[in-house]
Length: 510
Image (cartoon, rainbow, N blue to C red; front, side, top):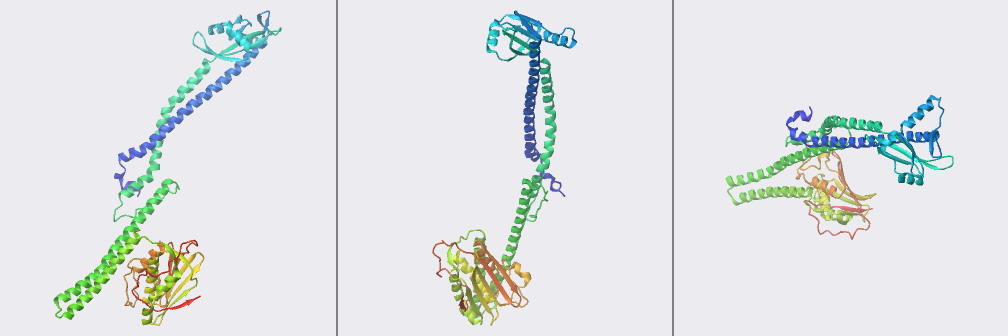
């Protein structure tokens, strides 16, 4: 079902008269302005075409008058075949039209009645025109208000004396054509605007539908209904990318709220266990203890549970600061082999006690990374602690440091109990602990590998895990090699975080 049908109250009149109305109005205004500009351009083009046509006709008539008219002794006469009806028709049309011929001194020799209505030229103007000896175009209005276009120029008689010849043509009919076009065109503009407005309204509705869907989905997102997905239209345009971004945001919000819910559940569960133990120990001491030793034992057990509770809270606080960006990394060039050696020393006694062989292989002792030493120490401590913790007596743990291309690779391999395949995708989740069929006595908080995963990502690296039940587990960390011009490396062990357990190791350099 479309979102607008699910949530009809979202599409209020105020919203419809908002962006949709403005889009439709903008479309109508732009289209109207475009029509007006096109109308004036078409009117100008039509006027130009008509003007060229009139001038072409006048040019032909001027040449015809020049050909049929003879001027002898300042007396113009028409020469034509009197028995030829076509020539007679031409002469009648020329003589009844607007024409005038004048001598060099400005004296008008012959003039039609039509030209007389336009007003004869002044002698000074005629003399100036003959002196200029170039074609001239004019527009005049007769006594009745009708416009004429005139073509004037100089002609010569047989003695090569100049005369001033003018022919004209009425342009009212042509002007009427332009006026009719203008009236009809601009009369149709309101109709076109109404049609374009309706079309723009419908197009705006269709174009804004994805926005309506996004608004409806956003309005009805709740804590219990965050995963709202809007179907894609397949248009591959800006609105399509908006829908994709909204769907991605909805998925991220749903994932974040699910993580928060799971985190709250896990925290309440993890805190409930030590709190319940503390309360039990204190109640036993309060109601059953009778001697000092019994009270002491109860207080000792309660303190152990308090310590576990403090460790959980401290680890959660540190992890929360890390993931929220409040934990600032002190990045500096670091020789990774030195850190591997220092951390391995911390596990000497524990490994000997459990009869575990701890070895390190350093292929590139000078390999450098740009890292926060404290966090790299925490990373190796967690990986080695888990490896020793889950390896049976007689087993082995190996730390291997090498360089592959532009990466420094650290791998921690053990021959412990291994991790089931269905558990591998979740080993870096908070509070996630692998629970094999036979529960191992050493159980942590389930936060160590979450720290490891965050540390690796904060250093722009990557981590992978491989495991097989009964054969062991291998964690592999890839970190970018530091640039060659980095400052002096940090190799001291002053900031090492003490691990919870320690062990023995044998060192083999290659």
